[in-house]
Length: 613
Image 1 (tube, rainbow, N blue to C red):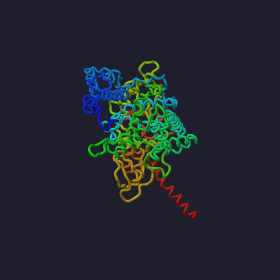
Image 2 (image 1 turned 90 degrees about the horizontal axis):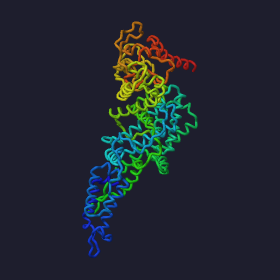
Image 3 (image 1 turned 180 degrees about the horizontal axis):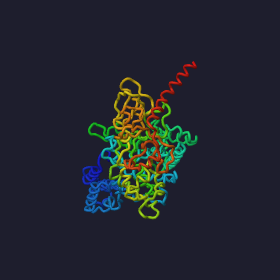
Image 4 (image 1 turned 180 degrees about the vertical axis):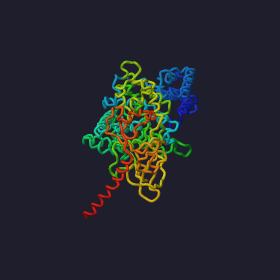
């Protein structure tokens, strides 16, 4: 706890000064005492022994302080030389640093912890993974990231409430948010409500295993993803869940509820024994609240004293936050699966993107449905502004994942992945493009270079820009219909809003609900058989894209509506002939009739009701 009030170097220097100036702090009552180390009853030697035993306790309890802090290590080594000069070999042995192990894995985020055991080979395919295996490997990944966060990282966040210059803590938060988003994307990747319900059931089983492993931080991320509004609004999907499954999800939600300051979670966490992973956000909030409420020092009559009450409460919080630094992982780590999971969780989406994908799966059918995503019941809302992984991190994760994939699925070891092998691994990555997109040279095989290039590009291009429209208010001189609700844009002037890029037209209240990729209008010749003469509307390619019922392979299951689910520019290189075979276009004259009919039907029904009255 000293690091909150004073640095380790300052504390060590104070202890050395106390040892050297021991005569200024105590007196020896013995007659004819030489004050040498052989005088065991000497008060001066007793105080010196206490100082050395303080160092001994410090070294044994927190050995990583002396390996990670070079200045502290230098101070202790110099102090040891002083003891040897005095001939006090017993004391010098107490502060010996030669047996302190290396903690390079804690200093550098890229160094692997040597204490992590490696397990047998397991499948890397999501559909083949058992919930228990997935929960265990997620716990290994959480353990690896969480235990690298040190005291200084927590303190800096409590003092500044920002993640600037705090990469270890930021990585943990990115992992949390990435896992929650990955859960949502894996559910939305399935085409039918029954298939989506199966994925939800699997993640609920994963959550139960995480609870038994006492990994509450990862449990929070998984349940947060399952209870997010993007999945909660899927009525058809939720209707496929059994009552027992819904009850289990409700129990997990109540466990992690924010009611009474997470009282249910705190009660269960305090009963845990052995290995456990706390919810990072909850305890960081406690830390910030305590620092805000109490000052570090209390002004006394003559000097400024340390606030003892704050120090005790800080100890209770840091005991939970740093508990993993001295804990061994009770599981076997499968690094191939962990590398694949890490890259899957690095896929960067926004809540708006995911909500748009949810609307694409089950379009809004009620006015009561929210127009924008709402905060989930237990989703982490205690931090914002997380930046995407840097290029070096992305490259490292992509390299590790690709090596793991080829190690397990390149059966003939020729350095290439065929189509069948690709379909087996594609399930781990929601909305991944088809085999022909990754096969850049069109030789029928995917090389390591092609796979690495694809995933690096997929991470470097954000999905969010594809859905942003540049709307401006517009006056129309021809009958124009909203592309979202198909309603007529009524009024004399400024009837609606038009996108400057893709030229779609919408109502004012519909412009924030459009689920359509923004595509710049093509400079193609105008169709002469078009009913609409308004040039503003012709920018929408003079046709409406409609899709057949899904008949996609695994590699195509994510592509459902106008390319909204494609997350990289490389998908635009998809062979046009393949696209044409999978979809057809509705002529604009037919579109006009359909839109007009949709406007007339409510009016006709209203007239019938009035006549009946």
